[in-house]
Length: 102
Image 1 (cartoon, one colour):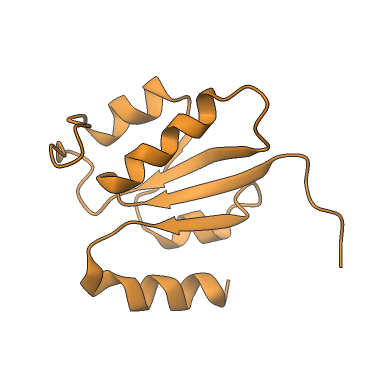
Image 2: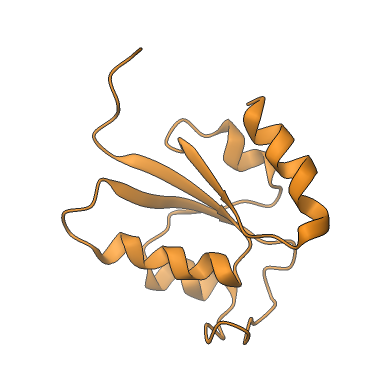
C-alpha cells in the first residue's frame, strides 16, 4: 500500500447537501480539502439546506478551484482521491459505479 497524500482531495457531486461538506476547507488543520464540485445544474440555488447559492458562488466562498462540467471530470483529476456523492438518488448507482472503477 502506498503512502497517503498529505492532503486528501475530495470531489463533491451535488451542491445541495454536498455544500455542507465545503466547510472542511475552512478548517486549518484538516488533511481533507474539497478540490472540485459538480452539479447537474450549476445555476440552481439550493434552499433545502440553507445554502441558497449557485455553484460558482460556493466555489468562490470556500476556495474550491475546479467546477466540473461533467461528473467524470472529477474522476480524472489527480488531486481528487475521494468522491462524495450527494446527487439525487436516481443518479447514485451510475456515479458510484464510475467512481469505484476510476
